[in-house]
Image 1 (tube, rainbow, N blue to C red):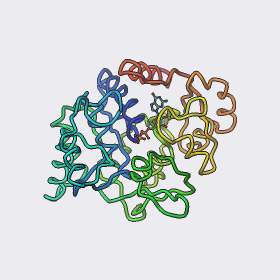
Image 2 (image 1 turned 180 degrees about the vertical axis):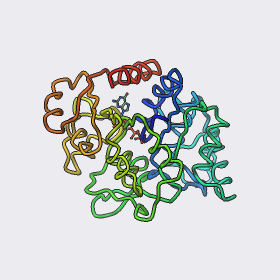
Image 3 (image 1 turned 135 degrees about the vertical axis):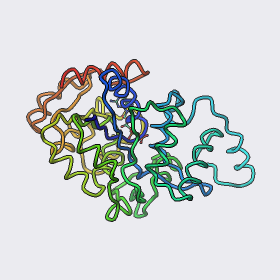
Image 4 (image 1 turned 120 degrees about the vertical axis):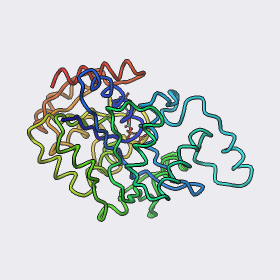
Length: 313
Ligand code: GDP
């Protein structure tokens, strides 16, 4: 038996680290299914930004200021690459680079992304009862349509600092991508399903769109399925989720997120700032609402939030 959480990068990892602590106290295994639609290659290296954020956060190595990368990492290699005329718009710290070198070597040696992630988690010190599972071992690439041209996800997100309008999202490769045996076993054994407060459109949606995932989760009606809103007071705490929702025709509010998940979740967690939306969410989506302080400034906040939600289920 286990708990399952669906997650992207920063928002996902912040909530997951709280779940990890409570899962340990309750002697549960936590399987965290992570988006790989942001994965890309840079300097010939395989980079999995959401998996890395999860690895670093759960092993206590994450940079608390940025939410991504390793705390106190240095950028000597990055700066030297820039000096040599290499691409330098995506920041890779020296220690972070070691992760990508190792991942690339192991993938080239024939290991799957799931095996490589499990190996890195062990070496980095992610607690054993937390299993980080890539949503698929197959290549999937999120792309955004902006002014008539399709942009690779990192080009939009990092290179252009998500400062361009978008009109559509697609996940290249999704038609042939399969969920892994590890993901399907975790879902089969799940006693609670969590949707972390991640970007619904580009972090959670690719996971749901992979293989049979959406159908499996939709059919899992006998367990609590709970989502935490990444939108508070109509705004994303970080990143473009609020603007993306508006640009793609959804409402940029916790109600908009709840509508997005209405067919798949039973319980929705609103931030206390959005308590006034409780009855609208309940009436429109049929979900039960939990109101909580969902802003996670540090690990204590994450643990407190996870504990509060679990005790309310
Ligand atoms: P990314 O892949 O790194 O962009 O990360 P995610 O998709 O996992 O998370 C992005 C979302 O996390 C944004 O929409 C933020 O609003 C949300 N987020 C970040 N920190 C918090 C927090 O402390 N509480 C809540 N409720 N949402 C958060």
